[in-house]
Length: 233
Image 1 (cartoon, helix red, strand yellow):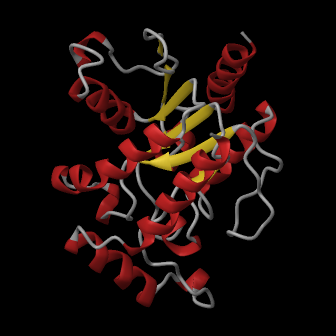
Image 2 (cartoon, rainbow, N blue to C red; image 1 turned 180 degrees about the vertical axis):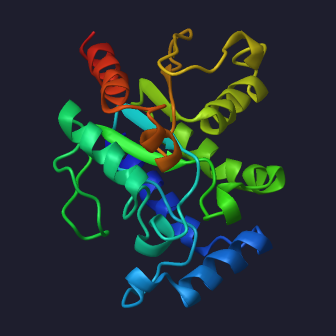
C-alpha cells in the first residue's frame, strides 16, 4: 500500500505542470515568467501549474489558495520564494513539521515531515483571485490528492477559500449535509465521523494578514500546536 500511495501522488505531481485547462491562467503564468520582476531577472521562472509537495504518507495536509506570481510561479514549489511561505515554513519548523525555516528554491534542502502541502488552484491567478470556473477546473487534482493521501488525519485550511473548497468536496460526496454547519474562523476545529480527517481553519499567511497583525506568529503557532496535539492523541 505505501508504494502505491507514493506512486499515485508522484504521478499527480508530474501531471499537474502540463495542465492547460484555463487559458487565462496559462497565459498569465507564462507572461509573468517572461516579464519577471526586476529582483528576479536572473531567474528562469517555472511559469506553469505548480504541483503539491511533501511526504506522500503524511498525516497532516495543508491546503492553500494558489501560487504567488513571483513566488511558486517562479520557483515551482508551493509556498516557496515569497513572504507567505517564509511565515508558513518558520511555523512548520517550530512545530516539527519541517526540517528548516527557509524556502527559497526547489533544491534548497527543505523537507516536510509527516506533512504534505497543496493548493485549491495550481496556477498563479491575476490579483490572487481565481475565477469560479478556474477553481472548478482545478478541483479534480485536489480530489485525487485527497484520495491518494490515505494517511491524512488532519487538514489545515489556510484561508476561507481553501476552507470552503474542502467543505464543498465533502458536501458533493454527501459526507456532510451543508457547509453552513461549519463557519470559518481562525482556529476553528471540526471533527467528522472517521475516517474523515479533522479540519482546522487558519487565516492565510498573506502579507496583508501578517503585516496588519490579523495573523500573528503566536496565532499561527497555535494552529500547528493544535495539529501536533491532535496527532499525538
